[in-house]
Image (cartoon, rainbow, N blue to C red; front, side, top):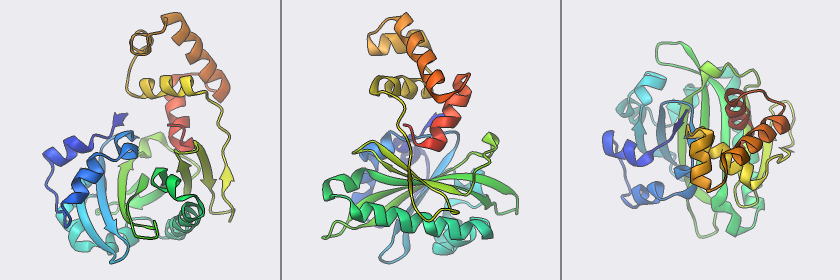
Length: 254
């Protein structure tokens, strides 16, 4: 797994950006800087008032088969054609439910709310992949309605997920997560089973730290970390860290 490093992406990839202030906003966005993915990723910044792409950067070629310039030229057609046909309606439902939820929340929460989609997509050569697609609100209008969104795409096909298409609405202000199932028109609240300390340990496990490194980082004993790790797996009904990472990915835990 990889922590998604936007600063590295901006430094090493060609990108086109219409509004220079977006760059700093993206690089300093607390939600995006805490994002982790299970492999390469690419980014599309979309203006939903004009439906124009403001920026494309990252490893789009290795994931989708289209390079950044091709995606910029395709504009919205890329987002329409990339998901497989029968998953497109589910994505539209997720967008609808996500915006309804965001607009229903107090203004001070909205910058901390984002949506994650899981769906099958088709690469340029026609081959199928499974996409994890984060969508973060970046810039809001005078009514505090978002209209610039950062979309981060990564290929998670190697995890062989069975429950796609589906989506999550994640509110980091309240630490609530809601599942969006295309078969159920209502969003469903997910139960938060981990304590704050357990989530800290999960984040460090995702970064690749072992128990000794986690103990040093959190200034606690090695035995305490081991106990927490056992409790984390027990609560989730899992047997190893690999299963835990899969669980966290599809349940918006961190």
